[in-house]
Image 1 (cartoon, helix red, strand yellow):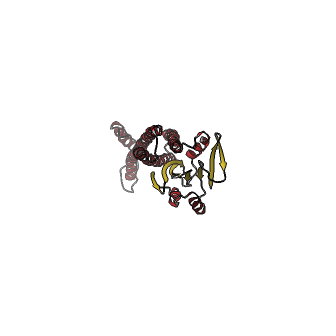
Image 2 (cartoon, one colour):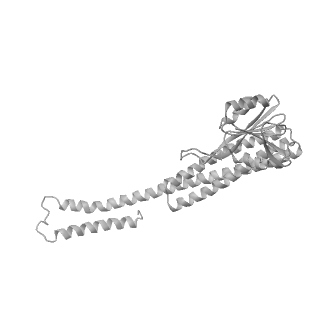
Image 3 (cartoon, rainbow, N blue to C red):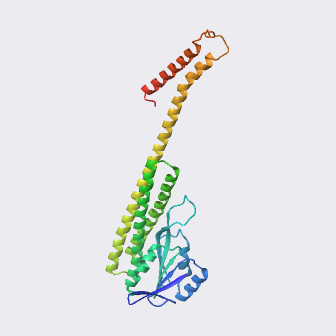
Length: 312
C-alpha cells in the first residue's frame, strides 16, 4: 500500500499522487507491481525499494543516480506465534531522497513512522534534511520507550520468580533477553550510521542540522547504554536464579539421601531378626519391642549425628 501526504497550511493532507514536497509512505502489504510502478514514476532504483523486505538489512546509506538511500533499524513488536521468540525485533526503515520527494518504505507497521506522520503538519517541506533527522529522532525515542517497557516487564517477572520459581517465568525472562540482543545490535548499527553521516555529510547538512544530528548520536548512545545495562542485569539475574535453583535441588537431594540412610538401619535390623533362623528371641515376649527399640535408637542416633555435623 502506498500513501501520499502533503503539508498544506500546517495540515497533513493525503493526496492521490506524488507531488513536489510530498512524503510517500509505503506500507505492507507490499506488492512487486507497486514497487515497479513507483520505481518508474519517481526514477528510483528498484533495489532501494526492495531492501526493506530483508528484515536483516543493516543500517547504511548509499547513493545512485542522485537518489539517496538511508536504512535505519527500528524496534517493533514480534507477531510470531512461537512462545519462545523475542517480544520485540528490529526491522529496517528505508528512507529515500529523490529530487522532490521523501519516501519511507516499511516491511512492518511501526510506531516511529506513525509518530512522524502525526507531527508532519508541523514540518517545513523545504527543510528535507531536517525531516529525515526527525524520522531518526522518532526511531531513537521508539527505542527508549520500548526499553523502559522491557525493564518494567523484567521487574514484574523477577518478582514472580522470587515468589515461585516456575519455568514459564524463566522463559519470559529469556524472551526479554532475546529482545535486548536485537536492540543492542540495532542500536550499535544505528550509532555507526549516525557517525558516518556526520563525518561524511552525506545529506549536505547545515550547522543547525549537524548539531541536531550530534544530539541524536548522544541520545542513541544513551539508549545503547541502557540496553547494555538491562542486558547485563538480566544475565546476572538468570545466572543467580540458575544457581539458586541448582542449590535448592542439591538441598532436596541431600535431605532425601539422609532420610534414606537413616531408614536403612531399621530396615536392616528388621530384616536380620525376620530371617527364618535361630536368633534367641523366638520364645521371648519382648522380641518385637526390643527390635523396635533398637531400630529407633540406631535411627535417632544416626539422625542426630547428621544434625550435629550440619549435613541437613
